[in-house]
Image (cartoon, rainbow, N blue to C red; front, side):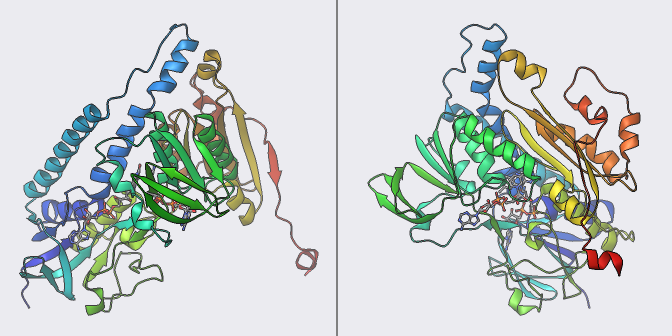
Length: 465
Ligand SMILES: Cc1cc2nc3c(=O)[nH]c(=O)nc-3n(C[C@H](O)[C@H](O)[C@H](O)COP(=O)(O)OP(=O)(O)OC[C@H]3O[C@@H](n4cnc5c(N)ncnc54)[C@H](O)[C@@H]3O)c2cc1C
Ligand SMILES: NC(=O)c1ccc[n+]([C@@H]2O[C@H](COP(=O)([O-])OP(=O)(O)OC[C@H]3O[C@@H](n4cnc5c(N)ncnc54)[C@H](O)[C@@H]3O)[C@@H](O)[C@H]2O)c1
């Protein structure tokens, strides 16, 4: 049977673009890619990139405050001009989008700027009605913001909208306690919006190390966010140009904007998967094996649509491994353990790799080397901001199971700590490493004694059995 293409990729985001470029450019496959929106996907257009630029923009007030502590009398952030920033941001995203498109073209990928759906195991339908056949189909359609399912939810904004606003809201409510909610609340308050963040749990960043969650929770309030914990919303209504929010205790308040940051769902609806027999998980994510292959042998899926670890570098690795395996004759799997990540808060970021203290305790014995301190940089300026560094070590093997850093540029630090930890480094390897002085990161190689030792309690019956 002959096909129009060796590979048809649906979705021009992190995973899809990498897979298409490697399959076509390095392995000589005939590749097509369909993108219904802008090339680059979530990360480039409405995620990591614009978000990080906004984080940088948002830190002027904190920097001015710090500099006043260093003797720069009267240092002020000045007035933030959203239209000026927005214009620059738009130009930057246009530039990146063009680069992504050009790189695909240079690799020989045929691009269709339209939505694609699946007709059968080897056929894709484009929005203009044409059909294309391919030996393999790669689904890399990503995710979409999830709404909480309450009356009036359509009156709220989603994360995509933040990057499109004509003007910033004066008073804004951010709902959620995950990566997006915490980063967005940090951005908005830093840019001068009166920011309320509500979260239904007792500490933000569920899934992260508890001690770090507590520090992040404290910091959000410390930078001026009105953070309210153990709170839910029950309804949204329009009142003039305001959005009226009713909370779970029946109180209500008006905001210029409400932003949902209540998670993301795999974007599998309306994709035609019912025509194929591709198995989905309960949350709509595409079920794949270790090779990113679905239950239909010719169809593969990578990135957020598979809901494994929803981060850009993971989608890129999965796309690359797929292309090498299927078109390059080089079987490659992606290890989904020890994946480092960072939450870009200000002034201190929260960054992690490996097990949390809670996970390590549940798994077995663990020695915790942890320190919290005021770093010289902020202490001199008169700030109370504390840094936390933590290494979790398995006593029997001395292997470092996890590392957690809450501090300035923790994202940069965790990237480097992730290398030895991925290699299986022991605490002795960390100890043998000479410190770089004076840095905050030197604590990672100078913590001598465990702060606490957790030992797995073995039930008496099991111990004597
Ligand atoms: C606000 C925000 C901030 C983030 N920050 C970070 C961060 O700092 N670090 C990090 O690692 N990750 C971050 N992420 C997560 C990261 O963006 C995703 O994990 C990553 O983009 C997933 O890549 P993907 O290829 O799976 O999907 P996407 O990048 O979402 O790409 C999917 C593409 O498919 C297109 N598409 C969908 N359906 C169709 C169709 N039927 N036909 C044609 N095209 C289609 C979409 O338009 C989209 O362009 C962030 C996410 C958000 C929302
Ligand atoms: N810095 C980064 O690397 C970065 C930044 C942003 C996003 N991301 C990726 O994108 C993914 C999605 O981010 P996210 O913040 O949307 O998801 P998330 O899963 O991290 O957080 C969702 C939050 O919404 C809350 N929530 C869910 N349903 C709710 C409801 N009905 N009412 C009230 N609260 C509710 C949850 O308790 C949770 O706090 C992340 O898991 C991450 O993988 C990464």
